[in-house]
Amino acid sequence: MVLPVVPLPSSFTESPGTFRLASSTRIVVNNDADATASVLANVIAERTGLRLDITTDAAAQGDIVLHRTARQGEHYALRIGSDVRIDGSEAGLFYGIQTLRQLLTTDGDDWLLPHVDIDDTPRFVYRGLMLDVARTFFGVDTVKAFIDRAASLKFNHLHLHLTDDQGWRLQIDSRPLLTERSSTTAALGRPGGFYTKDDFREIVQYAAARHMVVVPEIDLPGHTHAIGLAYPELVEDPVMNDNLLAQSSALGQPLPVAGEPYLGWGVGHSSMKIHSEATWEFLRDVLTELAELTPGPYLHVGGDEALGTPQADFDAFIERVTALTTELGKTPVAWHEAGSAQVAEGTVGQYWGNTEPGDAHADAARHFAARGGSVIMSPSTTAYLDQKYDAEFPLGLDWAALINLETAYDWEPTAIVDDLPAEAILGVEAPLWSETLETLDDIDQLVFPRAAAIAEVAWSQAEDRDWSSFRERVGTLGTVWNAAGWGGHRPAEIVWSN
Ligand code: TNX
Image (cartoon, rainbow, N blue to C red; front, side):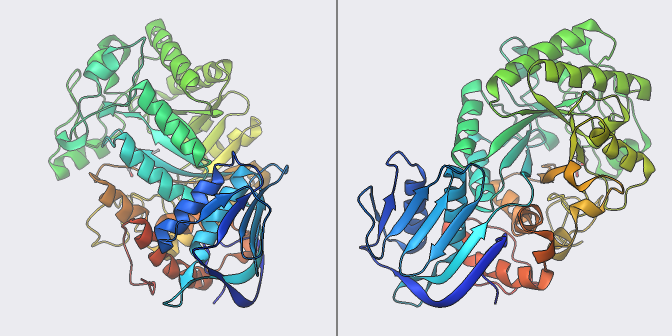
């Protein structure tokens, strides 16, 4: 088979022979501060039980050398012969280690690595997963577990959907009622919760140590019912729509009522008061504190499904909120509907329509590029991790599509929106909405193995992508994921190793 690595490296040459790991194998670093040495030691220990020594001594035959180079970026070179050597920036070394982790096999006696020369660099600079912590609140430990999984597949952005109709999940000092009154609920009466600022910093640091940038989202101007529990003067009364009415009655979920927690999952009923200056004072306070907490360049300001907001008001809102975000020194990101408006220069759009958009959605997506920005591709029919694999799958929704592993794999980000220049595509993100999820195990069921497919779409060169090759390679990851203690679904379309 081709090299059992996902995402497939951009170039590699295999040769006969194997490197044998021994308890005497050392990890040699050219910089003793290099945190990646302990990442490698932990990865090897987890898989093999061998706890290798780390040293800054000169390398000898049979060592594993981590060589931090001056070269920036995410590229790495991994050479496995009579020695093992990884060259790269700190991020590059981290990715080389993730590749090495997938290459470890055993012959029953020893742990082996195949002889190979890999030179690997990603296709897209933005490779993301999103976790919805609003419909269901997931604590810091679960978010860290999600980061571990994502980083192992070379994702480099974690989008946190922090607010929605069902709850607000972040401490904001200037607006204390948000955590006091708006965070205590979640969908279907699940427990609420929020991140203190220290919790949030801990997540950001944990992600950074795994080369992931946190992209926090405050969803605006719709998806804001929960804000009204704390600050009723800032939001409009709920506006019903046909979908919401039909869905609520089909699911037996009560309709939203102003000032009361909303525990259903219908969308499009809430809106901030666009013309009230109190709204803008609130947004300045919230986004200022969020910008201070966020070392990464992006703040996501939502913009999706604002069905209760009149179009002209929506456009005016988006124009102003993206300008405010830019003023705070951050690059705004918004769901693609926001492209109807004069978004601030450089705003990034997140496309979540299907793979054959109609004119309105395609126009909106192209508008981000016309405004000097770019687009993240998250088509709901291929990249939505919350959609079911098949009609019988117990978790997830199915409004966009049934997404089996092949569907999650077999799509091309540059082939969706006509006339969107390839260089205007910043990358790819797979969102995980949490309406039907309660536990980390539920998350794993939907994320694995489909996140591996999305990772390859985002990392590997288009011309190298091939379903039958991926299908074989992903099967070998069953062992890696089991060793890490990660659960997940093991669909029958794949032959899984264990
Ligand atoms: C649509 S996709 C939403 C979310 C839901 C999701 C469920 C998007 C930008 N908005 O509010 O959680 O569907 O699949």
